[in-house]
Image 1 (cartoon, rainbow, N blue to C red):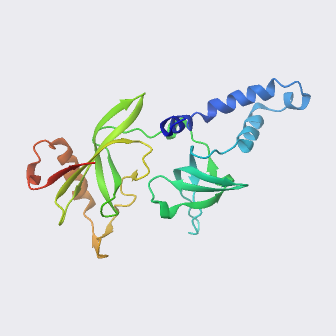
Image 2: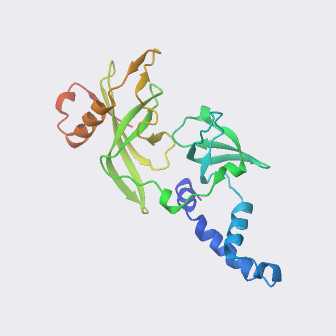
Image 3: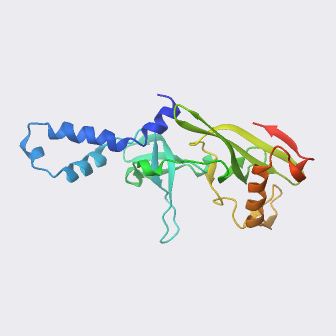
Length: 224
């Protein structure tokens, strides 16, 4: 099973444990037959294996008081009641060990879907900085969205970056403004205040007029 198939299958847990519930209910053992179906579902979910390489909804081990964050992520390895997980939208330095109880099965309404013009954060591999990007184009392969994302690597670079055929489970895209918040840091460590409203408006306008390039005629276009 390839990664794309594992991602799709990760949202079919409900179907899987319906089958397991029916299998248990078909058992001749009397004490199974008298259990409520809701309780059986809870038992099945509790004992089901969280598998390496599949996607889940994971609560991080943040030490912030009264704060709990959950992210789409994968299991990299598992040992007993602990699992090493990797979060989508965060680089590998944020991988961590969590309890199995912090890993929930995904529901179908959590499946990520995009439309052209949607904004998101994307990690630029050259600078290791997060940029606000936009969905320029979407194509479908086996009913799965693959995105073409565009962002501006401005400043000294003056580059328009176009990243093609990104699957929706690509690790280095995140919800808009998750990383591109009010303040940013340059590659030299200088903190500056972002104009997010201006950046959003500029990017949306740029996506619509990309072919003409407008005021970005001096920018070099780089396809990745």
